[in-house]
Image (cartoon, rainbow, N blue to C red; front, side, top):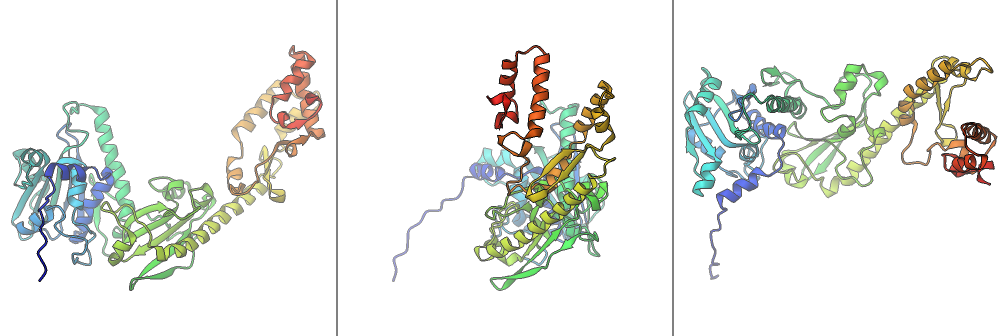
Length: 495
């Protein structure tokens, strides 16, 4: 018979646990998304996110018409980590650790109140972090103060079911300095509401379309879904999808290459850029039960960093909920670590998508370069002979010809030409033609070495200009030796 092992009960101290949960790094939009997760899990058809500015008394609430909870279920929902990740869940449950409601709320507010009804009877519980820290106990309060109950009554209306989550004493706004008349703080508050609306449209896009779509609103405005893959656009390239086996389940991977800017309207182009912009939205998009976990990341794949030539590459990954542990889904549902067994496959899909995206932009760059060959339309010509990017001023352009005309050019012509050249630098053509991983940088006059005739002619004109401006010949040559690109070339100035 084995001797029983002695043990101590080492329960976490409430104030320390509150501080830990409050510092998990949630942004406000991500924290609100965690509350919307709960509303979707209980099959709410209508979800309203309310932001109300009232200075230090400002509040945020998420109101849904889902199943609601009994008093016992509410206490369980309000208990920190009442359900572990191994707990059996319904097919609609988007949670994992059982701390989302609490950790998201504690990161944003000192008071969390939840009121809910399943069969017409409303039950209310409150976490007041000042009470928890002051008492040293997890005192889940019944009901709430009068002001909070008034807010809940207005939000509840005549409904007999559903759930309301209310945040009061918001972090950053609960000081006396956050007065009702502080226009700067009010503007920031409602800017966060706009950011939240964009974030929810990205994270829950799959729930906002189709026959079973939810009506999700922020401040009374319907949230528009954002499809990072432009799935319905006729010019999108869909690369072959694949289902990768993982512990008895399958992970679906599908890559998309978006159309170049020339195939999109300005509105489509701006919309496709997404909440974070083109560069930050390229890469993998990870979904779990149709809820986006990660948006725009190369998942640490070796040698894969964000570059503009890969902006059009976006890859969807759908992971089964039962493989959460293998993917390292974190508490905030905002990061993942791919399983080792899948990394080479994901790398293959990423390389294919990146190569295709780069080729689309390269073709557009070649078209742009040919277009720039119109002698009357553009002041610059961009070409790529022998794998080197070459950018030249178009000598057939009328303004260039006027400036070069012997005895006929004027200061006005030269000023107009300089302004044209400054305003029409072919940034787009250079960007899409330039391969950042090859040595194709254009080098003046063919690169370092002995100056050719063209370089000598330009240097001679500069030399004469310096001399006519009052410098001695020796001083003019000294100045030329320090000017780019003549500091890398050998000529009369270097002797």
